[in-house]
Length: 571
Image (cartoon, rainbow, N blue to C red; front, side, top):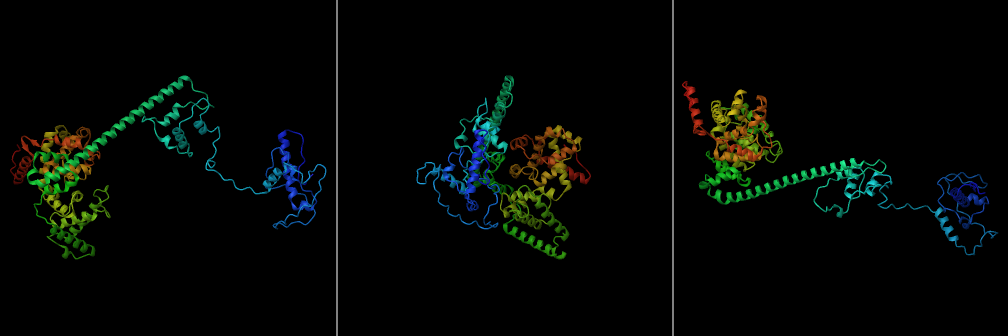
């Protein structure tokens, strides 16, 4: 028996005998090829001895069993193994084949022997083999190939299952992505409800399966209805947008070719007033505003440059700590002017914060700062008042900086704006009284509710008038209000206020003082433009056959007579 070779057991099954024979042959080959065995005189095995193994020759384990001690020189650990000595010639004995005799199995045994000694090259893994094999009992395999009594899933449903299970799925071919029809079919509903139970679970009763199928069909019908409704909504929005763009394009041509060249003769015509009410196109809005506001103050671009240079000089003097005598002008102290400049910086940071264009570092920050600083030098008696930054910002978005300054100065010179920005309490109360006259005439129920809760107009009107609705309304809606305001004047500001109250009349009548004040100071952001302007159009600015200007003049006369001590009766 060879050293380290286990004796073959001839009992047992054929498989056991084959394994034992395979192990014996492997150990014998390793023993025959070791140098110490050769020196000990152990004969080498011929390759024909390998013929007849049941399963073929496999590689020996990495750690061979321990070998018995043999005589001869021992190799030190870590030393290189000497080359093999040539085997001595052998004579053919009984049972041995002659070397020159043909043996068909000799080549096969030699190849097997070389396969044992040659190190195996690392097998190349194909791209398909990198993905872990899914066992046949896996739910994913059952879903894809179909379990017993169930049809396989479609590729789209299988991919959805793989995504939910967190497994990578093979991308479908382009043909699989093409839907044969445009009918909506929720894949998750198909996979969860329409499929039968797995084969390892009891089958559904017929009644339960029918119930689930009915539920599935109802869910598909509801999903189709929702999809159809959403598609109709999107189609309606797209048609509305296309119609709006087409109307804006036609209006731009009308304004540029017909109205603006003949402004003096056409601006008050019925056609122009109708176009004005529909909203001025943004591309011509700045030009129309400039013409509608006018320039009664005769401000030029050179005057704006002078005021801006003076404002910059004052900013430098305040930053370097200049003397108070150098900065005093028109009876105003340096402390008042410094407070005004600090207020400008503070208000600019709070002007349209969602746009992020007027804050420090924004593209319009310096323009807004220049206009407000130049105005404080142009009108030191007015100075800067909170709310001016929003008016100047809206003008900057539609005009160049010098033209925006001209429109800004003339706009604030209107009687209503001058009364509010100069904080003329008597004149402000007169405007509030005129507003209440038309409030009671148009909305008597809401007017009584406000009187009951002591809601006076100054609670909500001051913010609206100071900023010309640019802070309270969305910017595009505020610009449409500005369009008509430039045409109709201060009357439209109070008409807009009544239109807002009429639009939310049902909501406001159910609120108390606190909630009404909070609601009116922070209006909803999704105001419908058409409904809003329809509500404004329904307001009649006429009371007892008197228009706004007549009512305001009568109230101003009563106020002057009251100051003299002999008030007249209101009629």
